[in-house]
Length: 168
Image (cartoon, rainbow, N blue to C red; front, top):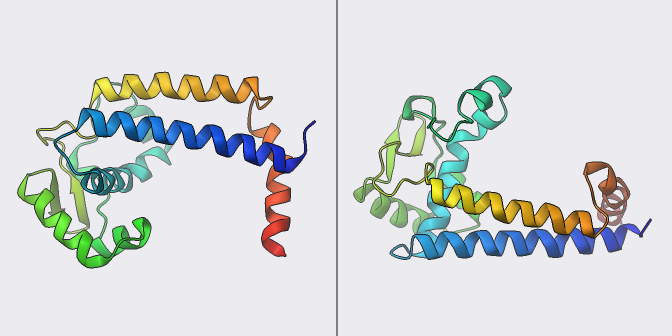
């Protein structure tokens, strides 16, 4: 078995490649959008459905490619939370959100911002990007397996090493 530092480096390299390929596809598909706006849209989208992903019944209900989370069950997110999560100035987030609301991509609810179910750009329901993500994820998993990482159990030694480094 390789040492923990080697595992951390291997996983970091491969997951970074996955993230960069994913972002590249996102930017290529939505080339009329500024990358920062895309980052904000997808951070809002993720916040909107995190409770769905954490609830097995809801996750199954909305797992079909034909099922879209309705706006009424989306969990809103505040501009301040977005600012903290993305490490962006609040004023930048506020200004970008105003533009995205004008384009009817984001909407304001009592609970905060949501990506609207009916947005004209199909954010959150883009089948082409979902299929591309599946290809990229399959490549990530294949590359990790080739590097000797088949599942979470292979990461245990690296978690202990990472915790020990933080404690120092």
